[in-house]
Amino acid sequence: MKIKAFILFVICCLLFVVSISGCAPSKKSGPVEKVVEMWVMPNSLNPVTDIEDLLKPFEEKTGIKVKITSVDWGAGWSKITTAATSGDVPDLVQLGSTWVSAITAMGALEEISRESIAKLGGAQTFVPVAWQTSQIEGSGKITAIPWFVDARAVFFRTDAFAKAGINAGNLADWDSFKSSLKKLYDADIVMDGQPMAPLGISGKNDWNVIHSLAPWIWMAGGDFLSPDRKKCVLDSEAAFAGVTYYLGLVKDGFVPTEYLELNTAQVSANFNSGACAMYFDGPYEIRTLTRPESEGGAGGSPTAKNFAVASYPKGPKGKVTFVGGSQLAIFKQGKNKAGAFEVIKYLTSKKPQVDYAKATGFLPARKDAFSDPFFAADQHRKIFKDAVFYGRTYPSIPAWGLLEPILTRRFGIMWDYVLSGSDYNPEKIREQLKLAKQEVEAVLNQK
Image (cartoon, rainbow, N blue to C red):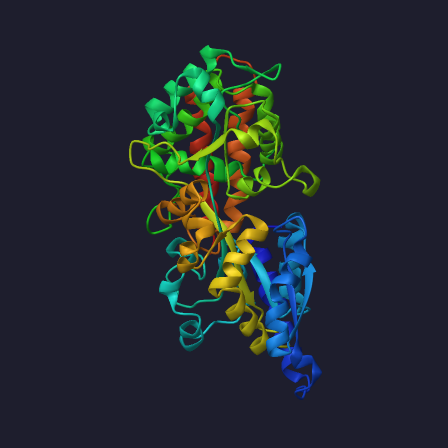
C-alpha cells in the first residue's frame, strides 16, 4: 500500500472512532477511576514484576491500581498503532523515543498541558536530548514525557589492554582508536585458551543497525536530514567518511567477519565470554557484568573481573553517541487520563527514577537522579552519564518511522557488500548512500 493511501486510511479510521466515541454515553466516576491500564515493553528480565514493585508505594498512597501488560518490542509498533486506530487503548503507554512523533501525528495522544508539565518540575527537569523527542519537532505541543534513557559507550577488557600495552587514554580519537585495535590485533591475544578478537560489532541482522552507524556519521560532521528536514544529506562527503571509517574497521581485519551475522545481544555474549576485547553497548551491560550467573548475569566471569568503560573516540567534528530511550504517553481515548498522569508524575520523580535504573540498567531521564551515588560514585556509570549530555538522537518528525526501514535496508546492503569477499571499493558505499538519499526524499516529498 502506498504511503499516502495508508495515511488517509489511518485518518479515516481515527475519524470513525472519534465519531462513535463521541456518541457514547459518558461513564460516571466509579471504581474504574482507580485503575490505570498501562502497556510497557520488556525493559528488564522481569518487566511486569519490576514495575509492579516500583509502583507499590504509589498504589498504597493513592489507592490507584496500575494494571501492567507487557508488549514485546517486535510487536509493539503494530499493536500500538492498531490500538490507536481502533480506540481499544490502554490509559498509559511506553513508546520508544523515535515513535512519539509518528503516533502523535496519528492524533492518538493526549497533549500534556503546561500546567501539568510544571507539576513534573518543568522541561528543564529532564535530559535535553530526551525532551527533544517528547513532541513533534517545532510543534510546541508535548505529547509524551521522558521515562528513561539509553546511551552507548565502549566496553573493553583491561587485561587484554595490558597485554597489548594500551589503556583507556589510547581510545581518545579515531586515529588512536584504530592504532589501539592494530596493537590488539598484533598482540594475538589468547585468554583461557580462546583467541580474542580486537573488536566485536554487529551487522545487518541487528535491531541497532542505524544506531550503530549514526555516531560515526555525526562525528564526521554528517547527518541524515537537512536542518529544514526537506532533504536527505547522507550523500555528503562527511557522511561518507563516517560510514567508511566504521566499515573499514572490519575490512582492516579488526572484527571477525562472522560477527556481522550477529545481533548486539550475541556480540555482547561474545564479549562476556572473552571472545573479543572491545564492543559498543549501553549501560545495562554493567548490570549484566555485576549480576550473578544464577540471576542471568555474567558476574564472577573473567570479563566481569577485568572490564572498564570508555566514551566513543572523538571524531573529526567531535565526540557523539546515539541516545535513545522511552517515553510515557497518555492515549486520548484512555478511560483514566487523570490517573495515568499521576502514574507519570510518580515514575518520573527522583527516587523511582533511580530505583528503576537499578532494576533495568537503563539511565534516568530526570537530570537530578544522576546525583545519586549509584551514578555519581560509579566510574563506569559516570561515562554513560556524561554521554547522555553530549549524545544526539534523530529528528522528531512523523516521517522518521517510515525512514528507518529504508535506512536499515541500505545499511544492510553495505554490510552485505563488506561480507561478499569481493575487492573492497568505497565507491560502492557511496552508491548506496545516494540511493538512500533518493528513497528518503521520496518519503519526505509525499504530500
